[in-house]
Amino acid sequence: MRSSDIGSDTTATAQPGSRCGADRGSVTAEAAVAVPALVVFTMALVWALMAASAQIQCVDAARAGARAAARSEPEAAALSAARSAAPPGAKILLGRDGDLWRVRVEAPSPGPVTPSLTLTAEAVALAEDAVGSGET
Image (tube, rainbow, N blue to C red):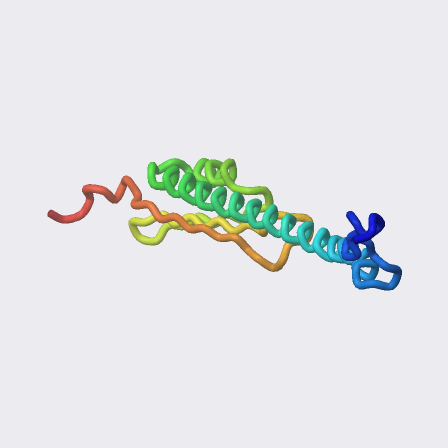
């Protein structure tokens, strides 16, 4: 064995034009594809969280309006109670159907570019003036 052979490793050094040299830009290309995909995915998650929050606000607004109407408060007060809990741009419908007060809240989904998605919630409450007025 010659002294020049000691410690020489032919697999550790890359020759020009070898496979190792051809893979040099692959990490950059993969990152160029992966980073925009991760950004889009993150934006979709944020939009979904905002839409879920707005849906919860719609449910809370419908409940608050139905409760206020069931307590025999004026319709303006019931609408105000619902409007205070509703997300921005919500449409609130209040109506009585027999002994029941129905409140429906509709709001556009939040975000800079909103898909055609309308968030809705409905709550129904028994009117207090109807309690105990039935036949026994």
